[in-house]
Image (cartoon, rainbow, N blue to C red):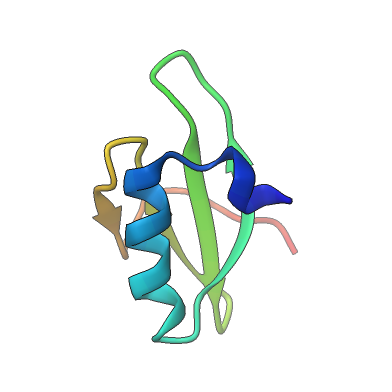
Length: 63
């Protein structure tokens, strides 16, 4: 269901991260656009609406 809310660029970027074990956890909505957050072994990665991947984001994900 979350995949339907991703932009096409985010879907392509997320597909590449899933090959490394990342799973789409949630989408954070903001005025700047939706930010996809993926998790792998308690490590987060984010994908902007434009498809830019950040594997060391400055966010805290609560368990």
